[in-house]
Length: 359
Image (cartoon, rainbow, N blue to C red; front, top):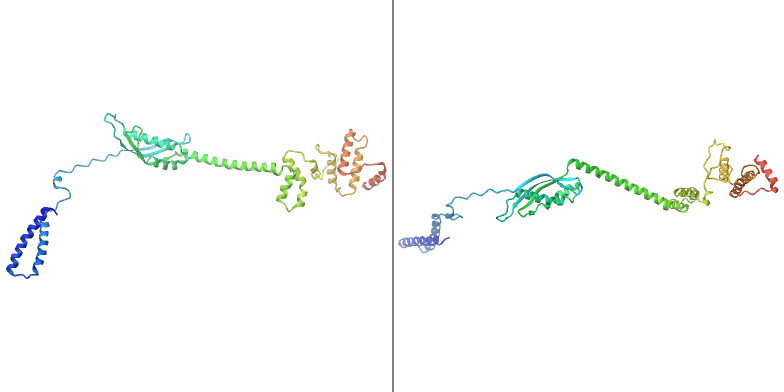
């Protein structure tokens, strides 16, 4: 309450108090009435002053005499760019950039030339954007878009210092044709990776078989035993084929000590033995063994040695072949191969008896 209001309230209180005092003395009021009249007097004076006094508004009266000044229209400095090509990390694949670019002019000296602030702002934003997109592969357009929204979301001055610019609502995409090409290339690369892994696996497996498993006959036998350690007899029967397999894997001849373990190939039933010739790589002993096997002459047959001796005797007979030395050499190899005893004059009777048994 102001000082004027306080003065008026006191004046009214005094007047009312005098009037009531005169009335009370004249009428002889009891003593308890006087305190009540004092309270009523003060309260009534305050209410009267507030009722007759017009309240003032928050704005001083002298300031409301002039009309309101109109608020100027807010100028918005923004420009929308659409599908601007920006480079990616891969040649010939450009991003298409769209955004709303906002800017505000900076203070310039009085003699500074007039500039196109919008063009400066767009150029500054695009320069900042391509520094990000040039490092991103084209198939990462979504990731690059989020990075651009963060990078371009700050108002920064352009190189000339005349404007400050930023971008909002950034979108980054590829053309449909480029996106289709990238999908095809991705599929081809994945297929090529799978094929390369499969080829490396096959190459490693071949190297393992040749350089480790089939390095020699012993390695092949040990490898077979490791996989079939409960088939000892079967392993013994396969020493010959394993030796042949190891030699073939390394392009080498079968070692001499394992040749006797090889079984001769089966001869068809309609084979004419008169026209049979030993293979060029085998000798007469190999051919004779194959013939005896086809004829059913078992190794434990007691007549086997006699038959072999008769063959060697025939080979060493004079005039049988054009090259007697070669025939004698083959006959000696057959004797050593089958442990056939050489013929002698003392064995004539036995030989004749054997001839009778074979006839």
